[in-house]
Length: 176
Image 1: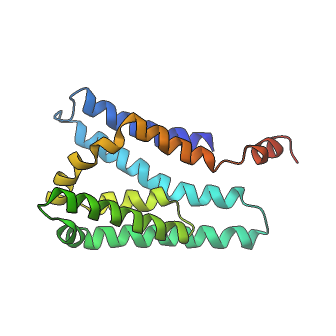
Image 2 (image 1 turned 90 degrees about the vertical axis):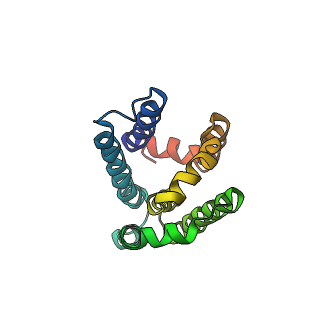
C-alpha cells in the first residue's frame, strides 16, 4: 500500500522538479512526462484493486466493486480519448473567470460521479485533466496554478488524512 502512495507522489515530484529546474524544453522531457502520465494511469487501476483487496467480506463482495471501478475508469478513459477535443472546445471560453469555474465545476462533477461508482475522486479529476487540451488547457493552466500552492497541498493532505481510520490500521497490524 505504501508503495502505491510513493509511486503516485514520486511522479508528481518529478514533474514539479522538471518545471522548477527549467528542463521542460529539453528533448527528453516529453518522454519523461509521458512516462509520468502512464504511471498515473496505472495508479487509476491500482487504487480500485487495492480497495478490493483491503475490503472485508466474501470474495464476491470484494470483486464486484473492483470490476465496477475498473470498468468505470476504462469508460472514463475511452470517453476522454474519443471526445477529449470536443470537451475542450465546449469548455474553452476567453473569459478567465468563466473558464476557471467551468474547469473546476467539470472536475468536481466527474470526481463526484467517479466517487459514486467506487472510483477515487482524484482519478476522475485526473481524467478531466487529460480530456482538456489545446487552448482550454493553455488558458486554464495559469489560472489553476495557485491551487498547487503548498497551503492548498496541506489542506488536501489534511482532507485525505481525515479519512484514515488509524484505529483500524492499528488493529489490522496486530492481526485482529
